[in-house]
Amino acid sequence: DCQRRMKALELSSEDALQRWLVLQIGAYLAGKGRRTVVWNDVLAGGPLPEHFVVQQWMGGEKETRAFMAGGGQVIRSDTDSFYLDYSYGQIDVRKIWETPRIPDYARGYEDRLLGMECPLWTERIADADRAAYQLFPRLAAAACRMNEEDLPWEDFRGRVAEMTREIERQTGLKGAPETLWVLSPEAAAEEREKEENRIRLRETPVPIPDEGELALLEEAGAAEEIVRAIERLNEHGG
Image (cartoon, rainbow, N blue to C red; front, side, top):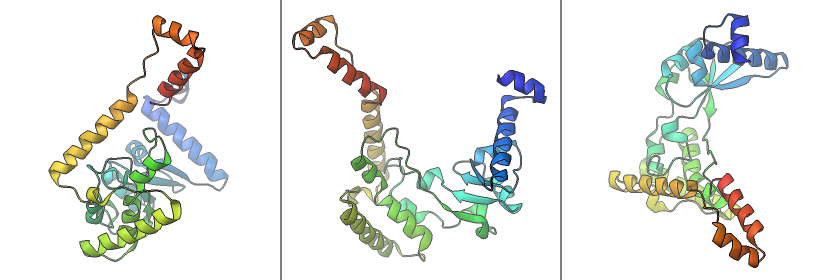
């Protein structure tokens, strides 16, 4: 178990055990000609060998910059600009346009910035329509911001609109309406509240029928099927 392993390795904490495990996995994969991608949190335990790639997501910019200064390579996925499961009240299209192409921690080490990733965590996204709503136009906006010259806002918006229309045409999916692309502080707060309510509704368990309701359902021959359906809904978050 963990405590026995810590004692055998003379490690002082669970954090030290985690770092030991990460380094073991990294060494194993390096022996297979592979590199290991880790979240930037791992740097809190100290520097990493060159066969690691760090994914910067939140905090720890000082450690990430030091890693790059030593030759390390980084993938950028800042939570406040590129997490597309966040609501439009947190990250709208204009905020992506305002995001610097090169973050402060990578200045002077631009050649060690491998690129960026826009995560879409899907534990609260039930279907492709919702995923498309979260992704587009923000994914197009991120690609445009990171790969194009610095465009004035209206030109940028037009380019993103053009890209989004083409994505929608080819996929048959629909992104978020343009009313969400630029939000005032008041509209952003309203959108955040709306998203919180949506999540809360999905996370509210569906009650199992009581004995009286089950008796009626059994008469209709549907009790077992309905209970199983409710259990599946609750298992998958609503």
